[in-house]
Amino acid sequence: MQFNLTLAAAALLLALAQPAAAQTAPLIPPTKPVAGASQEEWSKRWWRWALSFDDEDSPVADRDGRLCAEGQSGPVWFLAGTYGTARTVRSCRVPAGKTLFFPLINYVTFEPDDADESCASLKKRAAELTPAPDALVLEVNGKRFSGLAAHRQATRRCFRIADDDDTLAAGNGFYVALGPLKKGRYTLNFGGILPGMSQAVTYTLDVD
View 1 (cartoon, one colour):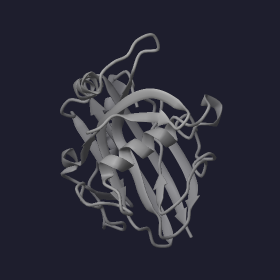
View 2 (cartoon, rainbow, N blue to C red):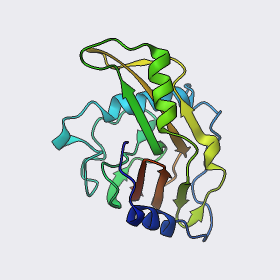
View 3 (cartoon, one colour):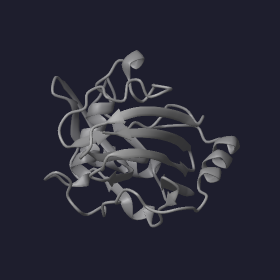
């Protein structure tokens, strides 16, 4: 999502990136399909999910995790990023066997309300807003992952943001897929820093 970068947010995100213990959930390679679809396709589905809510019901605006089950279906479970740079801490329950899919940091561009814009232009704008990251962080139960810059997913074909909305969109950013999850408790710290935006999120997931 789009954020204004602050030094406080940057320091907070980098503070999350402390090396520690063992891996408890597998990180799926970015080129490997998940549940029969590419991760680029899942990035589009993530945006359609994230944009399907009114602000007051949005898991992205949720401050504590009470909305994390909204709109979930099938074998993939979406986690939300945040609005703003403040660290967001959430807790929720997730059924065992789900694969998590979520952005470390991402951006979407839309056609303007009063004019058409080509897919090529939308993709170009999205790419310009998500340049090489200053930092990307993913920790699961204290295990810090590396090589996250390889997890960029950029829209190859633009997409409609909803079945009943003709607005064309393009996405770009860094997404990860984890799982399938076994029963247990997972603490996830994730986020990213780009020149014009940042996010830092913590989830405690009880998987049963």
